[in-house]
Image (cartoon, rainbow, N blue to C red):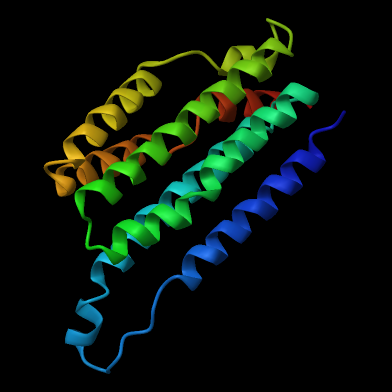
Length: 196
């Protein structure tokens, strides 16, 4: 079956997630910078979460440029990813409204960790359903980036219980690692365009 419906559904879900998240931002009571200052943790939490959702959308979009077909297991793996991403507004609001308290920040990291695991599972199921010489197989391989980001999430979740701002810095580092999509996919797509 073609990938278009999966991509359209995923795009719609991510758009709704971002909409829900922005609706959680509360308007300050007052017109001074001091009134805005009380919302700084919520705003920072929103910005980080928006960046994460943008990273997932961007990487998901790039990934499906070289996926030729989907099947039942791929659809379920994609839903698994969307489930964890759909929880981001909840954990964003919880950590931001509680001024980055340890437990909410740890759960925020756990959700990011589980979304990363879900994305990894999706790529493995995609690889299993495509030829070993396909563009997908050429573009995807376990790299140091995947291993490093998983380790950083795990460490950050533990650190969050004592140093939540330290954990947040780890989440920012992982976001910086993934902000540029898989360059192999770009090279493969560009090579195909040059062939035509």
